[in-house]
Amino acid sequence: MPIVKWEPFRDLLSLQERMNRLFEESLGRTGKREELIQGSWAPPVDIYETAEAIVIQAELPGLTHEDIRVEMKDNTLALSGERKFQKDVKQENYHRIERSYGVFNRSFALPASLEADKIKAKFSNGVLEIIVPKQEEAKPKQIKVDIE
Image 1 (cartoon, rainbow, N blue to C red):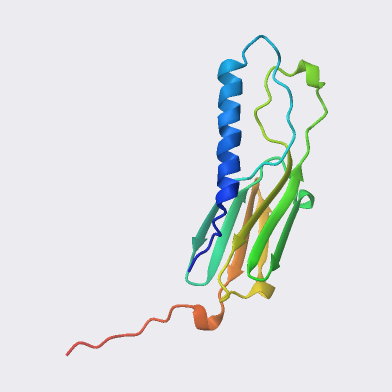
Image 2 (cartoon, one colour):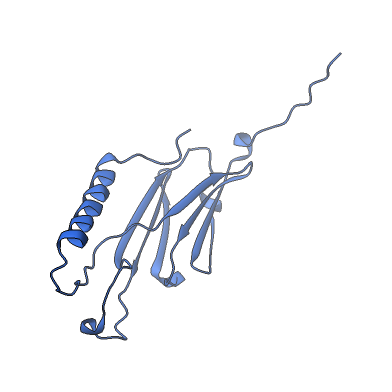
């Protein structure tokens, strides 16, 4: 029962971005200031299964619940939103910008044996927790075995 849909091209793009960042950091130290690059980013997630549900936890520090969208369609859970750059400090006053800003989109293929209409989500301390309950017939049943 696959929980996460493997997207090889997304992994390749992520690898390419990391390699570009590595070369920029090691070879690009010419005294120029690092520039702010806004683009897409992917918040890290944990996905685990209990007897009653599949639980997805995403790290979204600095966001509010208004910045986050969660949708379920055709057994695919989509998580999206945006982290906006804070303009309290002028960009030319920054020495280093390492946090990611911009739009993010994550999607996860989930099994059909879930109750999509009973999804619950809560956001606390920068962690979004999404609980997708299993259908009653999909829950494991324990059978007592008598030994003679």
